[in-house]
Amino acid sequence: MFDTVTQDLKLSYTPGVAKEAALYDRVRRVVNELDWATFAPYILEINRVKKQIGAVVLAHNYMTPEIYHCISDFAGDSLQLAQQASKVEQQIILQAGVHFMAETSKILSPDKTVLIPDLKAGCSLASSITGADVRLLRQKFPGVPIVTYVNTSADVKAESDICCTSSNALKIVESLESDTVLMIPDKYLAGNIAKQTKKKILTWEGACEVHERFTAEDIRKFRKAYPGAVILAHPECPVEVTAEADFAGSTKAMADYVTEKQPAKVVMITECSMSDNIAVLNPKVEFVRPCNLCPHMKRIALPKILNSLLTLTHEVTVEPAAAVRAKAAVDRMLQASL
Ligand code: 13P
Ligand code: SF4
Image 1: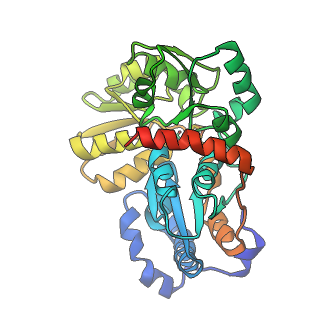
Image 2 (image 1 turned 90 degrees about the vertical axis):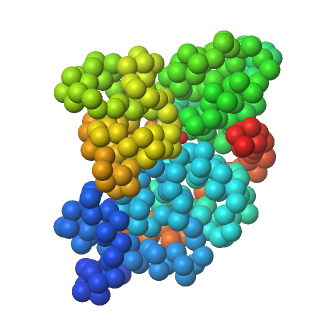
């Protein structure tokens, strides 16, 4: 994982780095001192190079805490990252997240250089459907509007009427006139929205490999083991899981719930780094961490980020004609989310 460019830098935890590393206070609760000694030289170098080349780091809530709290310029859920990508001033965007997020940034900021530190950072939802699949769906369900989750490729977005994220999915569905809506590709997000609307929801056989692993039985066990704990689940979880939880919402909605309500104890039914990142900001809340790791998100690590900034790789491109059509679907979502 350590490539030649960053190896040549021979970064080490010198007394100078240690002295400057006041950033440690931000993550002390979730990063031990040994790990910090490895992270700190990278963090300082990344923050220096970022300024030097005029880059901005947009980080998803599932990034590990040293990325989320120590090098990101903006961190948030998929909707917030898309909103941010449409208005950043810097010429270079480094996406600390997965490939569809970097594509979304490129679609919204076509004149900017968008970098992803690892091209293999994919997503099981994005790989579950192609543009050709969506064209077939349109033939099969003529006149039914297609709402596409942002966790998809630019080609899929290009074939869609409007995009959504887990933050705004219900609002987007309700904004459409049709009584029937095709929500693709996440069958669980679609199922969770179907419970909240009178519209008929059709869907696709896609799922998030992280959230689909949680079961209703898991939730019942946590309730028994941690009486009184508030259980929060992401809407990419199966419907019977969110039904057992106290609250279901996007990563931002979960973070806001904890910040506003300050529950004594909370169980996060989602990706592992979420609890770490929110724990840092909510020292009085006790976190139970029954998490599942997203192997795609976890490909993004400090050495790769530094390498990406130093070599301006890997640049994410989107075929211009598809980008224009995909942008229309994303813009409609951003407009409807105001
Ligand atoms: P949100 O950040 O929109 O809740 O999405 C979660 C997710 O799984 C992103 O890949
Ligand atoms: Fe995709 Fe799930 Fe990983 Fe998010 S957490 S990137 S939806 S596989």
